[in-house]
Amino acid sequence: MIDLRSDTVTKPDQVMRDLMRDAEVGDDVFGEDPTVNALETYAADLLGKEAALFTTSGTQGNQAALLVHTRPGQEVIMDEEAHVFLYEGGAISAFAGLQSHTLPHIEGCIDLNTLRAAVRPEDVHYPETGLIWLENTHNRGGGSVLSLEYLKNVRAIADEFNIPVHMDGARVFNAAVALGVDVKEIAAETDSLQFCLSKGLGAPVGSMLVGTKSFIHAARKKRKMLGGGMRQAGVIAAPGLYALKNRIDRLQEDHDHAEKLAEAINTYTDLKVRHTVQTNILVADTDQSARTAAEWVRLLEENGIGIIQYKAEALRFTTNIDVSSQDIDRVIKVLQELS
Image 1 (cartoon, rainbow, N blue to C red):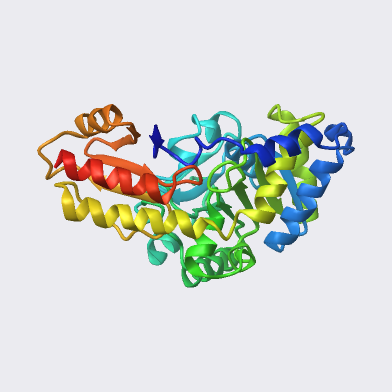
Image 2 (cartoon, rainbow, N blue to C red):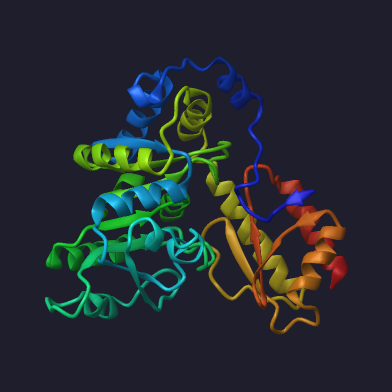
């Protein structure tokens, strides 16, 4: 199976498995796991932040950030298709007692005037705006990247109203590679940032939350509350550390594969990729196709290719480390044969 359903489906290679077997471990709740400590130190330095926390998942990292930055009854400004709004089981309200103030977006970017106007004025009737939420790259936006200029403008609005900014940067290294910048430049415009080790970087599990020392100190307790206090976690931290040290630059290969695949889809099929493919995600619309999205998923699966139906009339293809250039050529050939 050529699996393009997600970049979460990758398998750890032998190098990672060896590192997991040989990892030096200790009790992480006591702060005694040397491999976890090394990962947290490296991640913080890489993002230009004071400290970092290893979490079991991006969702856990995001929820810990919400619990630190806000208090129940406040409101979080975000786009209407944010991962934290659609795909985290309503945890923002269930755990943090927060209200989501969702706004329209174009490829993850909320109009700046709309964003500024969404900040609640001081009024007994209104919830307080507690946080501005960004997602980069933007999943539902087709892996779109938030520009540094946009991030600086959001930061300026946040500073104007003294509101913190959190970034769900699950694929932030894809964004940095696409922009050709050091990831520190992206992280600098945020108060906190969560990124995944288990997507494009290909580690089997885990995410990192970065911020100030005081923020991470508080987040560590919130992680414990969320069931994320791990013991000999070095066995899963080791492949994450390896991924950060060795697999960032190769993300460009995934981007190139996605761009090549999008061009072929638009050339050979009646599917339409209407967005600019910037990273490793492409969304193909089926509204002008003779087949439904479900039919495309079934036909490709019958030909050994996995994709997902993303919306009612859209498909998502996600390139990843386990999909080679030869695999992309095979997918293109199948698309040609089906058209």
